[in-house]
Amino acid sequence: MTRPTGLTKDAGYEIGVSRTLHLPPGAVWEFLTSSEGLAVWLGAGARVEPRRGAAYTLDDGTTGEVRGYQEGVRVRLTHRPPGADRESTVQFTLQARASKTVLQFHQERLADAEERERRRRHWKAVMSRVTEALTPAG
Image (cartoon, rainbow, N blue to C red; front, side, top):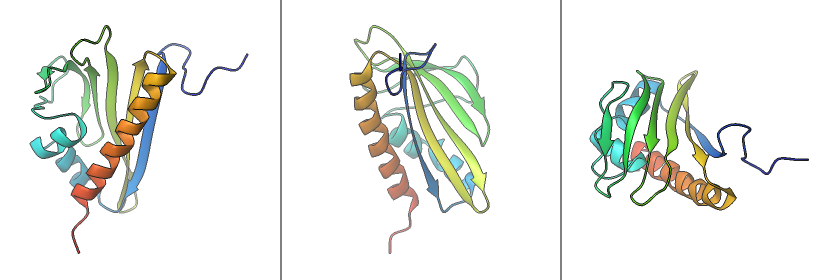
């Protein structure tokens, strides 16, 4: 029997989106971990301490905890919106490719295919906003 798209053996449904940015990883990292960048990819009011176990709360009431923070490479967090009966795991990773950076957003432990599709649309929109914020006008 074939498993549905995005259904993992152990972590429920997952989704990932990636894009190659024409910027060095340091510039992408600096933006994503700034208050402006955190608001773009995580949500308004995000303040994330670079320490495993640190809690965070967003303006909309979403809560979570830092599960991993590898400077310049990855931030991994739990994510529980208000009213949700379970938390998921969200992360971004950066990979250097010459003078470019591959940015990936990934979310796992999603409830079902419908939630996976909603989050796919969400992360594609986030990626567009990040790209726009990092692309010089002109």
